[in-house]
Image (tube, rainbow, N blue to C red; front, side, top):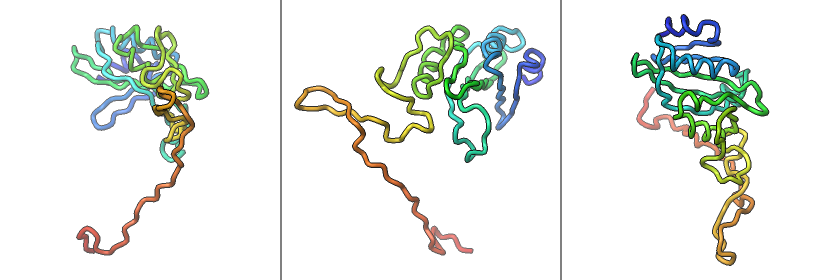
Length: 193
């Protein structure tokens, strides 16, 4: 499959990696939509199905040693014709407003996956016709899968018996530091040196 990808996509491939028998190609945001159409339609490739699409936040990847764009979209494709699987990655060029083209017109299975990545990571899919929150409330502020989003969130909701409705209020949980337990016993777990 790698030879066909190189022959068909050539200069549009920024990176090609093979780990654990899986092939991952990375393309620029400017080439993403064109590459997606080529992957689907070219007779040497024929990736007819989008299996999954997800957002990624690399802001604290590899203990801060990672340098590059913060937000990535990873798309998992399947060629039934060729019996091939492929991961297609694209990085949003702007960390402050992450935007990549929508592939919903290429594979309509991308619809809710792109909405989920928008909702949870704040990645905007240019050209998506119905890009709105999918898992959080419409009034929700922020994107909870971003690594800088607080684990406790900003607000909590509860039912108020006096008002007979659900209300939102500031978080009442106090942050705490969890220190891992360190076991220093010589023969712990039956290990003898």
